[in-house]
Length: 152
Image (cartoon, rainbow, N blue to C red; front, top):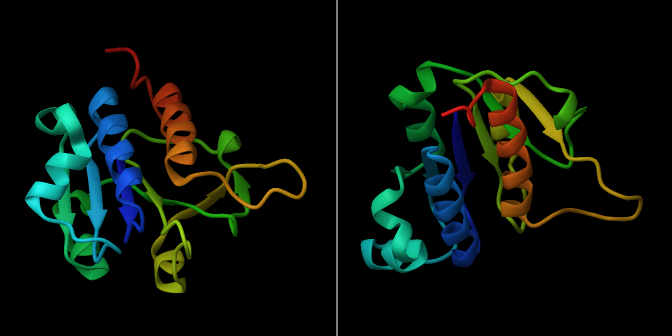
């Protein structure tokens, strides 16, 4: 299981993702460019004291992410407000990568086209979207529950 962020806009969300993935022992993929400077120093600052416990891979582009060795196994599962299937009804597998788009604009069509599944998190009527890391926490929790990821 992996978590991936496509061109994140908000450095604090990246920090929250680093902490989330460190605590759940899940690798994090960050697909650039980010909307903020991403340097070793800023990454360490965002990670706080979880940096040495995080497994982070940085990819300079969408094409570099798709070409990575980690993409050879498992499915790419995109979480999107344009998704057709609720995430809690989907059957996750251990090799899946859970992908979340930009906070400001979601994921472009080329990202949608590359995904093997497009899932949504059902919201109350009239609500537009969740914070990306809140959504990632919900999705990752369900995926790990289904695949035995909490069993040690």
